[in-house]
Image 1 (cartoon, rainbow, N blue to C red):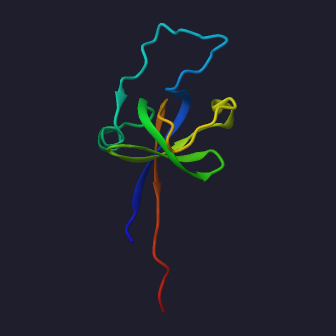
Image 2: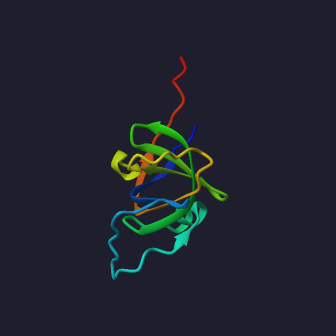
Image 3: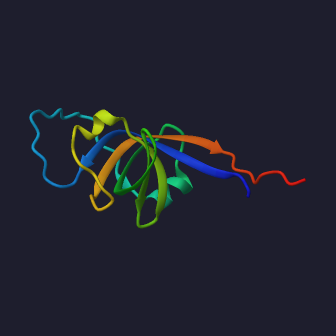
Length: 114
């Protein structure tokens, strides 16, 4: 199997698109990143680029790493536990994640054969 390029979105925020009560909210004068697609981010994304995606968490692969998917593809999202703030998120819960893009290479190879 050849090398597989992987991109990780380090999620700084997780917005559940369903209504959720907020006790306080900070409003920054910095405009949020425009919502893009996974395919566009994988094709044209740059290291440390601010990104915003809408879609679904479809699988947990490690403690803070999740497979995030939209209609165009999948990406690994690193989401700290505190971001969920006790909210239940399942593969049917549409969410928005915002964060910085971190590029990395994951090398996957087949076992060597004698």
